[in-house]
Image (cartoon, rainbow, N blue to C red):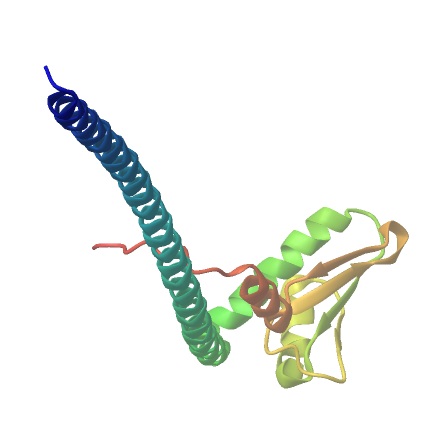
Length: 195
Protein backbone atom coordinates (compact mmCIF):
# COMPACT_ATOMS: atom_id res chain seq x y z
CA UNK A 1 0.00 0.00 0.00
CA UNK A 2 1.34 3.29 -1.00
CA UNK A 3 1.45 6.35 1.09
CA UNK A 4 -1.22 7.85 -1.06
CA UNK A 5 -3.43 4.86 -0.55
CA UNK A 6 -2.70 4.89 3.18
CA UNK A 7 -3.62 8.54 3.31
CA UNK A 8 -6.73 7.86 1.30
CA UNK A 9 -7.63 4.98 3.58
CA UNK A 10 -6.88 7.10 6.68
CA UNK A 11 -9.00 9.90 5.20
CA UNK A 12 -11.92 7.56 4.49
CA UNK A 13 -11.72 5.96 7.96
CA UNK A 14 -11.45 9.38 9.59
CA UNK A 15 -14.35 10.73 7.56
CA UNK A 16 -16.36 7.59 8.34
CA UNK A 17 -15.53 7.93 12.08
CA UNK A 18 -16.40 11.62 11.97
CA UNK A 19 -19.67 10.83 10.21
CA UNK A 20 -20.51 8.15 12.77
CA UNK A 21 -19.60 10.43 15.66
CA UNK A 22 -21.57 13.30 14.07
CA UNK A 23 -24.60 11.04 13.53
CA UNK A 24 -24.39 9.83 17.15
CA UNK A 25 -24.02 13.44 18.37
CA UNK A 26 -27.01 14.47 16.23
CA UNK A 27 -29.03 11.48 17.52
CA UNK A 28 -28.02 12.30 21.10
CA UNK A 29 -28.90 15.95 20.56
CA UNK A 30 -32.23 14.95 18.97
CA UNK A 31 -32.96 12.73 21.99
CA UNK A 32 -32.12 15.59 24.37
CA UNK A 33 -34.34 17.91 22.31
CA UNK A 34 -37.14 15.31 22.24
CA UNK A 35 -36.86 14.84 26.03
CA UNK A 36 -36.80 18.62 26.52
CA UNK A 37 -39.80 19.01 24.20
CA UNK A 38 -41.72 16.28 26.04
CA UNK A 39 -40.83 17.83 29.40
CA UNK A 40 -41.95 21.23 28.11
CA UNK A 41 -45.14 19.68 26.70
CA UNK A 42 -45.90 17.98 30.04
CA UNK A 43 -45.19 21.23 31.94
CA UNK A 44 -47.55 23.14 29.62
CA UNK A 45 -50.23 20.44 30.05
CA UNK A 46 -49.89 20.63 33.85
CA UNK A 47 -50.02 24.42 33.70
CA UNK A 48 -53.05 24.33 31.39
CA UNK A 49 -54.76 21.86 33.75
CA UNK A 50 -53.99 24.08 36.74
CA UNK A 51 -55.35 27.13 34.88
CA UNK A 52 -58.46 25.18 33.85
CA UNK A 53 -58.99 24.03 37.43
CA UNK A 54 -58.44 27.57 38.75
CA UNK A 55 -60.96 28.91 36.22
CA UNK A 56 -63.44 26.16 37.14
CA UNK A 57 -63.01 26.94 40.86
CA UNK A 58 -63.42 30.64 40.15
CA UNK A 59 -66.55 29.93 38.09
CA UNK A 60 -67.94 27.78 40.94
CA UNK A 61 -67.24 30.58 43.43
CA UNK A 62 -68.96 33.09 41.16
CA UNK A 63 -71.96 30.79 40.72
CA UNK A 64 -72.13 30.13 44.48
CA UNK A 65 -71.87 33.85 45.18
CA UNK A 66 -74.66 34.62 42.72
CA UNK A 67 -76.72 31.73 44.10
CA UNK A 68 -76.25 32.95 47.67
CA UNK A 69 -77.27 36.47 46.68
CA UNK A 70 -80.36 35.15 44.91
CA UNK A 71 -81.26 32.90 47.86
CA UNK A 72 -80.93 35.88 50.18
CA UNK A 73 -83.14 37.97 47.89
CA UNK A 74 -85.73 35.17 47.75
CA UNK A 75 -85.64 34.76 51.55
CA UNK A 76 -86.19 38.50 51.98
CA UNK A 77 -89.11 38.46 49.55
CA UNK A 78 -90.55 35.39 51.28
CA UNK A 79 -90.11 36.99 54.69
CA UNK A 80 -91.80 40.19 53.50
CA UNK A 81 -94.65 38.19 51.99
CA UNK A 82 -95.02 36.13 55.17
CA UNK A 83 -95.05 39.31 57.25
CA UNK A 84 -97.80 40.78 55.05
CA UNK A 85 -99.80 37.55 55.27
CA UNK A 86 -99.28 37.47 59.03
CA UNK A 87 -100.56 41.04 59.34
CA UNK A 88 -103.56 40.18 57.16
CA UNK A 89 -104.26 37.04 59.19
CA UNK A 90 -104.18 38.85 62.51
CA UNK A 91 -106.34 41.65 61.13
CA UNK A 92 -108.89 39.01 60.21
CA UNK A 93 -108.59 37.46 63.69
CA UNK A 94 -109.17 40.90 65.25
CA UNK A 95 -112.20 41.41 63.00
CA UNK A 96 -113.61 38.03 64.01
CA UNK A 97 -113.03 38.82 67.68
CA UNK A 98 -114.81 42.17 67.22
CA UNK A 99 -117.69 40.32 65.57
CA UNK A 100 -117.68 37.84 68.49
CA UNK A 101 -117.92 40.76 70.94
CA UNK A 102 -121.29 41.64 69.37
CA UNK A 103 -122.78 38.19 70.11
CA UNK A 104 -124.51 36.98 73.31
CA UNK A 105 -121.83 34.26 73.58
CA UNK A 106 -119.24 36.97 74.31
CA UNK A 107 -120.82 37.85 77.65
CA UNK A 108 -120.98 34.12 78.51
CA UNK A 109 -117.30 33.85 77.62
CA UNK A 110 -116.44 36.73 79.97
CA UNK A 111 -118.52 35.20 82.80
CA UNK A 112 -116.62 31.91 82.29
CA UNK A 113 -113.27 33.77 82.50
CA UNK A 114 -114.45 35.51 85.70
CA UNK A 115 -115.29 32.10 87.20
CA UNK A 116 -111.89 30.72 86.24
CA UNK A 117 -110.13 33.74 87.80
CA UNK A 118 -112.20 33.42 91.00
CA UNK A 119 -111.31 29.72 91.26
CA UNK A 120 -107.64 30.51 90.80
CA UNK A 121 -107.65 33.36 93.35
CA UNK A 122 -109.52 31.34 95.94
CA UNK A 123 -109.85 33.46 99.08
CA UNK A 124 -107.36 36.10 97.89
CA UNK A 125 -108.53 39.57 96.88
CA UNK A 126 -108.87 40.02 93.14
CA UNK A 127 -109.45 43.03 90.87
CA UNK A 128 -111.30 42.31 87.60
CA UNK A 129 -111.00 44.81 84.78
CA UNK A 130 -112.64 45.01 81.37
CA UNK A 131 -111.73 47.41 78.59
CA UNK A 132 -113.46 50.71 77.93
CA UNK A 133 -115.13 49.20 74.85
CA UNK A 134 -117.03 46.77 77.07
CA UNK A 135 -118.14 49.33 79.70
CA UNK A 136 -121.81 48.58 78.96
CA UNK A 137 -121.31 44.99 80.17
CA UNK A 138 -119.72 45.87 83.53
CA UNK A 139 -122.89 45.77 85.63
CA UNK A 140 -124.24 42.61 84.01
CA UNK A 141 -120.87 40.83 84.37
CA UNK A 142 -120.63 41.80 88.04
CA UNK A 143 -124.08 40.27 88.68
CA UNK A 144 -123.55 37.11 86.62
CA UNK A 145 -119.94 36.61 87.71
CA UNK A 146 -120.57 37.42 91.35
CA UNK A 147 -117.60 39.80 91.56
CA UNK A 148 -117.20 43.56 91.05
CA UNK A 149 -115.83 44.54 87.62
CA UNK A 150 -113.87 47.72 86.95
CA UNK A 151 -113.66 49.49 83.60
CA UNK A 152 -110.20 50.47 82.33
CA UNK A 153 -109.53 53.79 80.61
CA UNK A 154 -108.23 52.03 77.49
CA UNK A 155 -109.93 49.39 75.37
CA UNK A 156 -108.50 45.84 75.52
CA UNK A 157 -110.13 44.89 72.23
CA UNK A 158 -112.26 42.52 74.30
CA UNK A 159 -111.60 40.10 77.12
CA UNK A 160 -110.65 40.93 80.68
CA UNK A 161 -107.77 41.11 83.11
CA UNK A 162 -107.64 39.81 86.68
CA UNK A 163 -105.04 40.98 89.19
CA UNK A 164 -104.37 39.10 92.42
CA UNK A 165 -102.20 41.58 94.40
CA UNK A 166 -101.31 39.20 97.27
CA UNK A 167 -99.78 36.73 94.80
CA UNK A 168 -98.50 39.42 92.44
CA UNK A 169 -100.29 37.69 89.57
CA UNK A 170 -101.91 39.11 86.44
CA UNK A 171 -104.28 36.85 84.52
CA UNK A 172 -104.35 38.59 81.16
CA UNK A 173 -107.23 37.41 78.99
CA UNK A 174 -107.47 40.72 77.16
CA UNK A 175 -107.89 40.03 73.45
CA UNK A 176 -105.23 42.61 72.53
CA UNK A 177 -102.69 40.80 74.75
CA UNK A 178 -103.71 37.37 73.47
CA UNK A 179 -103.40 38.50 69.85
CA UNK A 180 -100.02 40.14 70.52
CA UNK A 181 -98.72 36.94 72.17
CA UNK A 182 -99.95 34.73 69.35
CA UNK A 183 -98.59 37.12 66.74
CA UNK A 184 -95.16 37.04 68.36
CA UNK A 185 -95.10 33.23 68.49
CA UNK A 186 -96.64 32.68 65.05
CA UNK A 187 -94.42 31.21 62.34
CA UNK A 188 -95.03 29.74 58.91
CA UNK A 189 -93.85 26.16 59.08
CA UNK A 190 -94.01 25.53 55.33
CA UNK A 191 -96.37 22.57 55.52
CA UNK A 192 -99.37 22.32 53.27
CA UNK A 193 -102.41 20.93 55.00
CA UNK A 194 -105.00 19.03 53.02
CA UNK A 195 -108.62 18.69 54.05
